[in-house]
Image (cartoon, rainbow, N blue to C red):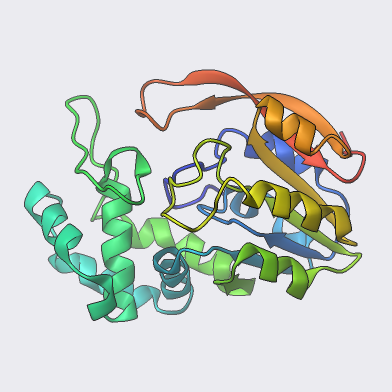
Amino acid sequence: MNSFLAYMGGKSLLANKIIPKIPEHKCYVEVFAGAAWLMFKKDETISDVEIINDINSDLVTLYRIVKHHLEEFIRYFKWILVSRDEFQRFRKEDPETLTDIQRAVRFYYLLKLGYAARINSHSFSIATTSKPRLNLLRIEEELSAVHLRLSRVYIENRAYADVFTRFDKPDTFFYVDPPYYGCEDYYGTGIFARTDFVKLRDILAGISGRFILSINDVEYIRELFAGFHIETVKTSYSASGANRKKQVNELLIMNHEPLQ
């Protein structure tokens, strides 16, 4: 199945190239989950345990509400319109003043109707060539499958270093999708810095589990992770606009020989 989110850096176009390379494991962990495209697209039966983690508390709240309180979440959308005025009203709200369900509704609305899935600078997206991405008449149908898929998934809101410390075991597989090199602030100031790439490299060098890290192809990253197995794959970026895609190389970095 597909993820229910459009999210900056989502791996909708790359997931099918990564999934066949996942080694045998018991515990599956997405360290920087975002839209969790790999988790949604992979066969859930290949993992005994599944964990998704993200530092963004709004995103984690949304996952937890869809998992545990879908009916009440959907009820809020019965009284909402798809409009620029409604979008601006949600933008102005302070999420800290809202209940968890209201906070999840706000975040989902802004993501679905915002331009290019931006996290920090939401702007209303409207086009003469496509319908709104939020269909209020089908929201229950679209999210019911997501609700069921999340029923067996643990949802965490930890710093990435804590995730490795807590869940690293020989039979754990980590999918690692940090911010791209040069785009460290896209998800918020102070969350992930340029220096974190060295910290992440050192952590990955010492884990007992297996991992695949996906990152943009730049020379600094190639040199930093030179001690690991590195593959180059083709993908497309479309963050600047849904109808403009740029063909680029992406690096898949692993501490094991891939299955394919």
